[in-house]
Image 1 (spheres, rainbow, N blue to C red):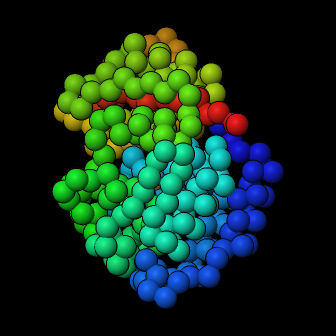
Image 2 (image 1 turned 135 degrees about the vertical axis):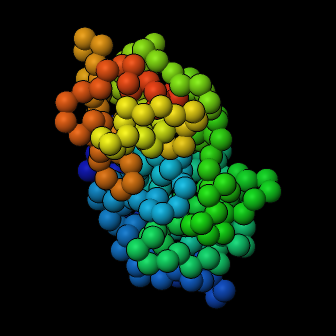
Length: 264
């Protein structure tokens, strides 16, 4: 679901009115001018958001949907985090810990704006482990049910999830997420990264390790499938050319979550 020009213009106007930063700002090692410039880029072209080298695929998928849905929510969230160290969208409350906030993301590994938005969300919902570095793989990973919870908290309607951690899904779930995508619902898939590459997309896997967003309804025909997804700051076609059989696709497909954007 894509935001209209009025919503984008309003989101950009919020950036124009970016408030003064306090002394002892919450994210002291992230350059304000760079963050503001990158906020603009994310609003104008949401695909530029990129988890980079961090294992923040679920927050990235979630916020890609929000950017396309209500970019003003994403912008206000980013402004509030950067100026106060906490933010709220609907009933979704985010307050990252000190270790997350004082980290300096390495250049070329993840943009400051994406660390603030994505790592803050993930860190806020960890009971024990801190997301304090792009190398914190375990702490950065999301758990089953969290993306659907975030969708509900920010105002999506009719959110549903059908996913497994260890057992892959099949034709029934593929047909279900296809129907949802054609009904203009936002759809995130839980997959193994094998699926993203032609050299591995027919390999077997045993657990999901990545989340992507369905960019357009998949082509499912005669027992074969192809689709385009958002992931890692770009679009990927699965497979790059042609199709996979439903059985081949299912080897690395562990389910989906979908929700209906509501514009109140």
